[in-house]
Length: 264
Image 1 (cartoon, helix red, strand yellow):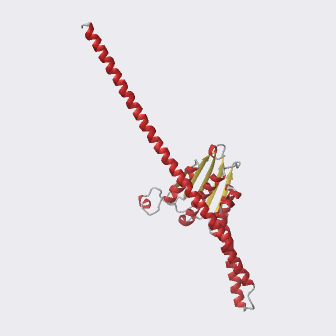
Image 2 (cartoon, one colour; image 1 turned 45 degrees about the horizontal axis):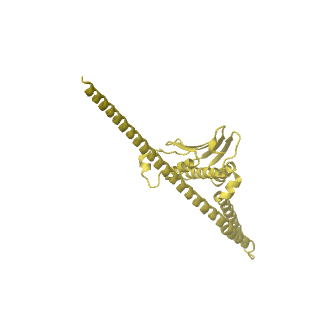
Image 3 (cartoon, helix red, strand yellow; image 1 turned 45 degrees about the vertical axis):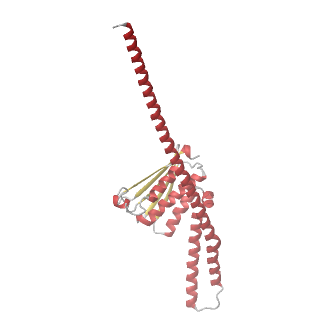
């Protein structure tokens, strides 16, 4: 082969390899950029949803606080005044006295129930109580106002959790308990708080009728699964995991795990 032709071939081969490597490099950089853009978009969407959820929670808490204040300042006082007015009734018959006494008992029970409801809704009151006492209080309310037996168990040495995270955890617990009362037909509910070395765990179980979580018929029902998604989203907002296990006739178990690194 002539030397000149051999040189041309080497130059051509070198140029071809260089162009091939350059094209591969461009393709790699383009792919990485596309992946980076995709990750950034996903992160932006996640931040948007978290910000939106945070705003919704703040609005909800303010609404709860306003309702709590309304119950305390107006409705509760009005019922107390009505009860006092009954005490100042003029002379009445024995039958009327009995009716007045019964009415006063009903008003007293209503005032007590409204006071309990006001405390459950009041953000500041929950923050002052702390998560552990707030859950115990909520469980006692259920036991006092229904035929459902409740038990609250604490394991490990309690440690301080951020107040905002405590509030979100408590609202999740309230929704879990509300679902159990309304739908499960449970006879007993157990709330267990486990303070571990690297996490805080909440476990709520009931012995109700349970349900099939992935039932297609249930998923097609309006609003079905919305509460579950809301609880899961709230848990994610504070870096916790949320899971629910249930089955027909097997009751329901809800587990929330907040890693220690996210809790202090």
